[in-house]
Length: 518
Image (cartoon, rainbow, N blue to C red; front, side):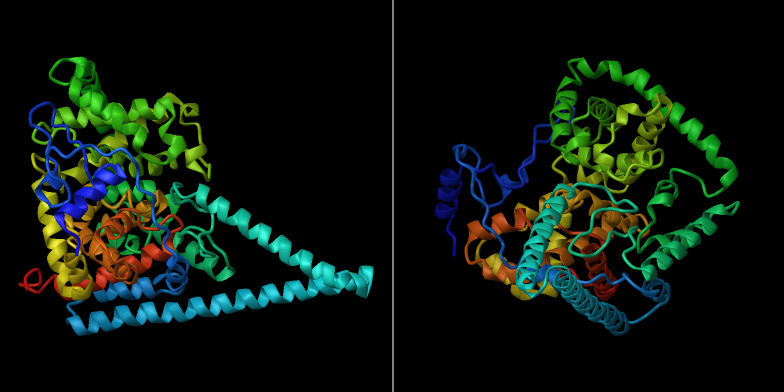
């Protein structure tokens, strides 16, 4: 068991920045609050470290990744599951159904993997036969050897491509992740037909004079096609009315109102009362993702205005580090409304007409504001909302996986030291942006998705790594692992299974009056 002295020596030795530490700015109204000072990891006045810690490689991720499956990859299981959700079912039925869905799709994944391997073998044999015909028996062995070399080279190239694409938003033809397509990508004719069918359902629903928002939530829970995601998000967030005839006038009015705020407040960013807030926003924006997008001067300018205006209009919280991340998904999704580019991070935003940029900026501001209205206690002084949610997560995990909970407690790892960021940034720093966008499809479809359902997603997310967590035997390695989880190649398959497990946990515990208590 790690001691306080041992942990102090670790941070002195490593020189790493205190994990999870975040600088908060409250418009110069309140002193910064660092939740880690209330834990046992670091004491106030600790000597600043100097040398970074080298991250330990996780050797079991490939094994873990190969065993995951998409609970809504094929068929109409998502519609069936949502139909079940609308009924009053008991816990046993819901848990059994969720387990069956995941088990069935795990078997389907194994079948697909076998078929792919069989097809690859046939291609190699065919290549060898063609070489034999062209060059004779003496070239056959060489041809097969070259075939293997070429295959290895292609695999290495594919892995490099996947690493570069980790920050891309979800698109209609994104890079493949571990042989599985993103939600709008079709690998087989069957998937193409299903995605086309889902898109038709959305279009039919959105074409009516009054959109049925409840039906839209049910349809959106298992993912929204890229082409209709901008309008779906605006409706689900409450930014746009359900009535089609009122939408255009609402957009014009809200966009005009936002730029009236800009004209009224933005020039005060260098005033003595507001300069600390603006300075922190200016520092935080380059830390966001995707990498290329955030370095564009036009993007920086837009984000600075959005965040500063929000902070000025919400003095109870002001700007707090972490809010800057919450603009990104809205901005990327709304940019996709005006462009055909697949890789948004490589698109030059400044090439768009000024009117389009203003529309994207205003829409991003209002949708982010709607989101924050439901979780604003996460960002008021001392961030009580986050502290409460971290405590609820700890008690929930102790109920669903006592072994993992006991292992963390035994090695003195406090939930606040890793889960604070999960709540503050809504897992945006833990998964690629494309996964965040997919998560938000569901969050906006769930009642209190960002404030309540997110708790069950975090619980499922932690327990998903139970094997790796239980293998770590000391405080240092456990904390480093939990703050650097290997999700770089995650895609819709992993997110869908995570949501399925969170859905099961919600039904198992949400109606139990003492489910947060031992």
